[in-house]
Image (cartoon, rainbow, N blue to C red):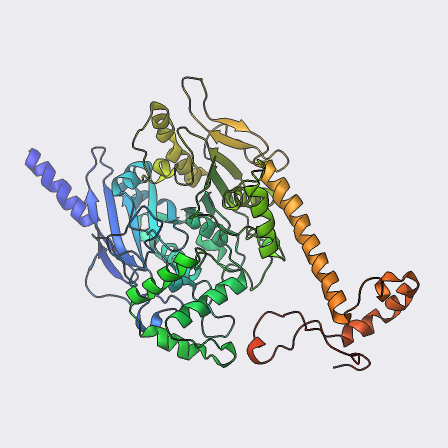
Length: 574
């Protein structure tokens, strides 16, 4: 009798592990559950063609249909994960990596469950979608009737090479990869027991920055997902010219660029880069990162996130209305030099170098109000993104983990994805562990993470403090004024400093064009002001405000003009 029961269960599980998709059938693996809600795992499902050969550095393309049953029982290789400054060395890496992994259950195959699509962190250079515990995902999410998906995207230079708007190479390939995976989920997840109209995108660190970019874009199809969970999200925008300069340096390092931008042919450069294997590409990137940590670790302000060179303020203001949870930890990056990066990539600043030097001086003078800019980036990102959605009428929730013994950037990953677990686990940590992921499950299924957790009121900036201390009788509680200090510094003192630098540059520019002091100039003589006002349009139209954009300066950012000798003829239009 028992043998008959076991055989019938095995036959049933075998049937459940084969799922039909638009591209062909896939066969996954199963895990028996005592409660009868057996778990199913489908790994290495392609959502795009392998980005190899001629498709290297190209936009992701839909996969070809397959014949026969696709074996989906083993993970793919990781994308080309950068091995410096990471605790997790990947078992194998390959350019052929654009796959996703789906964890579901027998219940969901009949009930169509809510879906989480998780994007990993790692500064857009490291980590992977295949580094997490199957058991943790099955226990914390699938057993709660949530379909859980982990998705890959190209890392480092493979997903960020960009030489500017030339019509040959698209910006932000890693974001395009993520959109492609979400399109696959939207079209196919119902075959795996997921509801395509109840999808939450979730990420940590760079993955959280990515879900914010996706969630706030008014360019990306708004039907692909409905909610956002962003945990410890830095604002990983990088400056446009930095991204382009890094790409030129990379091409030059491999001998595919001679240093002359005016004569460079992007197609020829890409053809040259195709000759190198993926390991050679990664090694060249590694050498660059060793001298410049901020090489290939961010997204530029361009498509498909926003229109090219768009404003961050408008990006947040024009976002589609979506419910959101924003999380952080008490210390975030602390003083970790490997995470330290230039400030200001979460603001529309005009003088990033000067602002960084100003902030760096303040911080190293040990002024207690001035935290490191990487941590400030997380706090301001959490606050401004959640505030923007609250102002749009969505349900927005902020929390901060402050659990002892420490709450650093990765400390809470043990509670929601099962990695970076502390060697010593206190009973208080066990209590937090028992309900942390449950809050995310509740939000995914209902849009509300927990009873008593108040929606964000932008006037109060209320948030949930996650901290358990049974000895002192402390439990999670609502607090107000989430990181007001960082907001006052960045949107007050730092922005004021940026404006003053701009004014100073304008004054220096005005002085250099005529090579005269203020006491000698017309700006120092009040009687001349009416004449200036009468002739301002003619003067502006007749003076060069930048070097001629020709030769090597074609397609480059405008540069201040050089001073001239003698008197410039400004009587005719040019």
